[in-house]
Length: 341
Image (cartoon, rainbow, N blue to C red; front, side, top):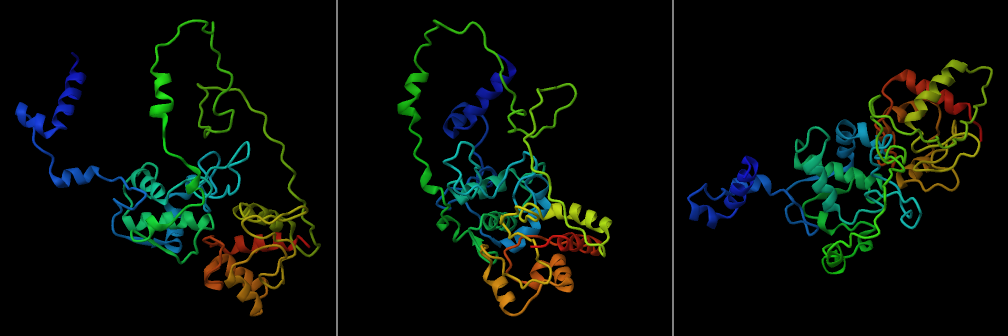
């Protein structure tokens, strides 16, 4: 018997206090030793530590700890997982399965973040930080307001949209008997071929080296970016710089011909427009109140809003930390000004 098998056998014996006592090996685990491993959280809330957090705090923690892979708005970067969006896509050929569209229980989100995140530094988050991050993920899916406080007291009561889309695992009675039957060993295929790689199917982040080539997938056709209408009095270089800065906004907003509402409204013709007045977009109550109070998207207001959105509209739905550099704000405002209605 190998050394490793002997260790495994000893470990299995020690896992049973009665066997350990009988053999005179080891001792029963102390309560604090059991607690160090007992981290699982159930849908009914059992296992949750005392704590709380809201999306406003969670946004800052998410930006520092999670956004490098999951994006500032939980929209995912490259092929790293998207955590928000995908509502009403589960009946499609290529559904987007996110926390909001697919996951059954908030406890699963809490448990996963607590055990495994952030990537490379698992289990370094305090319970309050985990509650805040989970709240921000729920907020990014439009499931709560930003000031909703998620805690050990209410997490189990929160039901995700697809909670009823799951059923109990019955494979023990329906599938296991088939899998455990003797193999027929007849009429087998003569050969098996690899027909596609996961990276080509666009389901795996592509961190390949030259030592691991794969087939090149044809890139999907993309519509060309709309050409802004440049006024003679506006510096074209500033507009070009603004187009680059706008990439930080493009996850939620569109501009140009054919622009459509996304998480945020289209931004064509927004300069000097009253806030909250684009047809067909559902604004937050606070943005509607700001517009009703006479707020206009002039240069000064845009500068202030782009720097610290919630300082201008405290409960805006726009979950964006802001553009800290004045030159970036100048550039993106010039870019937006180049688009008419």
